Length: 317
Image (cartoon, rainbow, N blue to C red; front, side, top):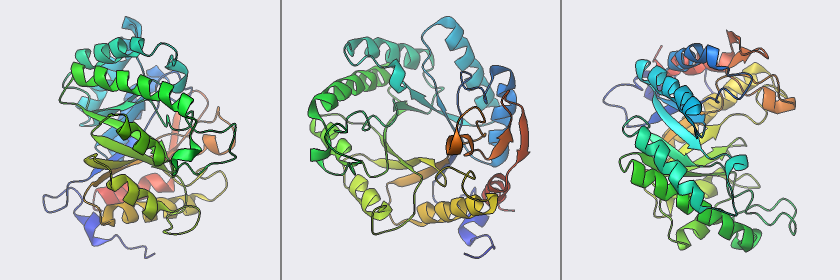
């Protein structure tokens, strides 16, 4: 790939460019790399990247937790970032009592009506639905790869959360995401009558159109579903710069930006890189996805090559 900036990135923010969302993933203050006292610096750094979306995982349930999210929203609005909230992490969901989830989701959406751009219903819920007891490493693009009892529990929880968000803020977008090639999970949800606005795809693998990692087949399947929009909700080279150089990580992300932006699918509307900061408290590759270096206490260090490259391209420099 040429080192020169492609023409379509030169005017990425111009009115002549197609409507496209660029974003970056962060985390909440329960993650050591993202302490609350550094929140302003985190949001400021995201804005310096040149993106318009900040994707954050958080589920407030009391006034102290709401106060933190108030600060996140205030900072995002001051730096002209739209907040994409991922609510109800795996450890939060009570699969045995799903009706409790509706009131929590509605309370969040009621409080922040008009201030949160998009709500995602948990994260990669196809994984606890896969029949991992029977199958080893199922691809997830076939209904037979799923445990239907597990799926039924997951589906009911997702239905309650979706309804809560929609009732609380009908104008906010709703998102359901999957990782890798787990597309049959979406088919099953749709058969059960669930509808959402945006399908998120999390992809950290090769950008091939054949073989084991078939991104083209995956996007085409998602595009065939009756959901109006697709966004790449998490993307980066697998394990970041833990097993590769910063140069290789930069090159992967440059290729990914080009690939998705030019992909011939009207439904595909955005790309959100994972993630803003390294997480040195985690092990192996999970610690090195960041666009900027960070220490164990959340003090932000230098910007990596991927950061400077993305910022340059998005700002047309």
